[in-house]
Length: 162
Image (cartoon, rainbow, N blue to C red):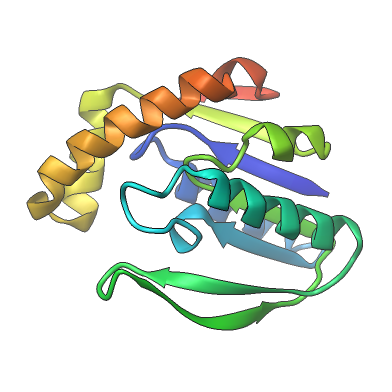
């Protein structure tokens, strides 16, 4: 099973992923991939590179194969060494861009979590630090343009509000 949880920053995607992971682990093997680990910095995060990575991940999962991820280090602004992600019965993708078209087309069960820009911004700043305010304001415009282009919210199976 493939699950994707998407929505604007600060909407509660990681919280939902954690809850679903705990529930699914009662009866199956589960892996969670966070989009924050796949982004190439702030400005190149929602690019064709992300789509290509997701395509590789989805293909490996659907084939029942392990795959490797080089996680992005936000302190050094570069990717680290590749790490093995073992094959699992359930793969949860969570983060902005997780439920993009290529993932939906692969048959993922998709969740969209909506929240207001103001609430999302405050949650992120409370979690990650108020020094990120200017970057997060730019990010909100990036994610909004991305969601509009991809039509993510309109195409998700389950819609939630936080």
